[in-house]
Amino acid sequence: MGETSAATDATGPQVTYERFLAEGRFMVQRARKTGEYVFYPKVMLPSGETDLEWVEASGNGTVYAITVNRKREGSYNVALVDLDEGPRMMTTIVGVETLPIGSRVKARVEAGETPRVVFEPQEK
Image (cartoon, rainbow, N blue to C red; front, side):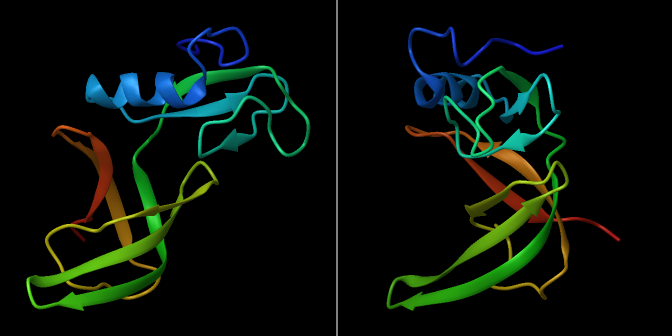
């Protein structure tokens, strides 16, 4: 089910993650033995598991926290999103200045020189 093992990937988990993003894929790591998910890419989970595989993230999540940064050039937000798989990640929610805590969001890979995962509000 997994794409590759971070433990045996010679390029390391960060480069592997960035390669997936360049392909337009949002991948997270999961321990084969326990099913525990982790984000940001690692070679070992906090629990000590090293049998990590890459799996496609559902892309669904819930806003845990959000703040708006205002500059003369415009405003942008920085949010913490709890992925449905369990890990929490820092990101940006595009298309809105802010959202209520607990709002449902959906991930997409934003292409560019450095691809990144951003979230959009989910339609109700």
